[in-house]
Image 1 (cartoon, helix red, strand yellow):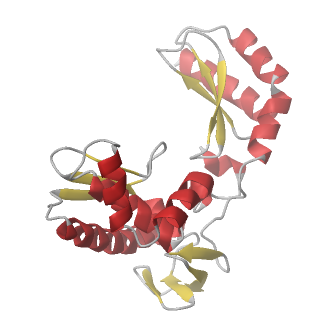
Image 2 (cartoon, helix red, strand yellow):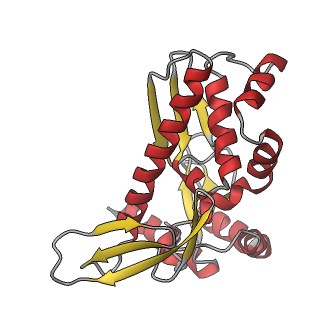
Length: 248
């Protein structure tokens, strides 16, 4: 109990340096380090399992300028709140929350302009995220199976996840994983990632044959590939609250 209390107190000290600075104890760490997490817009102070709290705090304080610079360089967060405009498969849609106290369940739909949320919840952000995942899964799954059919390959399973380091993957047994956040990318960029993973069904490498197959499956290979490589990091900002305490 005392150890947990000490860590909580240490975490509070880190929040005094910056509200988005968090402690991360790593058994593999051999020294103190600061790591920017683009996915959560946090800075992690990575420490070994056994570490000196005073030294760790001093280390963080001496790097305050670096911490501020890194967080300031991140794209502005876009919370799922009323009136916020988000891109959905290349179309700008406005989140419209309609408070409905008597409604037992949150109901969400969208049209050409709005994502309409009828809810009795004070903060339906989690429900909005779930809805976006559902429509993303339907669209990307259909697109992936369509592309797979073009090369006479079969997808055994397709999952959407909230990944940190990659936008998609393909395993030798035909399973494909895609980031649900591709829903916020321009259509050509999303299409490129789907084509990339489907092409791996035929070529489990990055050979010249693979790239030719990938390009053949794309609507706009050059544009999609360039966008995701240059701007892909921006996709992590959607759904993040503007409140620092919610970045845990």
